[in-house]
Image (cartoon, rainbow, N blue to C red):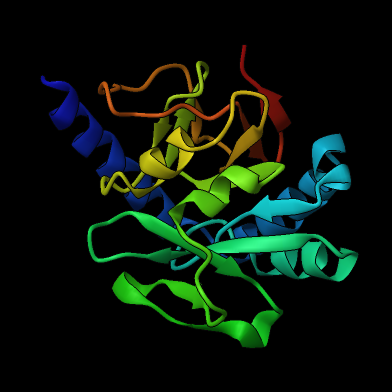
Length: 193
């Protein structure tokens, strides 16, 4: 099986597991992820956090975004560009979000450019699964691989996962960009070498 086929199969399996999750388990997971992340030293000291507004079955980031914003962090959220790359704009509270392409929620503030992610002190990335080397399985568009390529080597990049989505290994392609940590409700923050 090619890496592309293996990724497709892993994606389908992860999406099916998320769909089958109990809504109350999702709510508990979102609270646990928020609490763990807010206590991470890099997050406590971060002036700028690049994050994302969760959609569908993704771990819910609404509470986390609001808490970061209320704490005074400058929160950048992505705007999906027609070519699949990500631009970034500031989050100014829950009322600043509007519907975007492919069912996303985006900030209504002026775009800052695709390179704005490089100014973040911490970058949060969506993922369907992450392996023990930091290989991240996304939805297949490559948007976050492009964004993560712009982030410096000392910046904490974290994927938000449900329990069971931190796995031993995942197929990877040359363009895939790893994350430096993952967070799950049960394991907390797991850093990769």
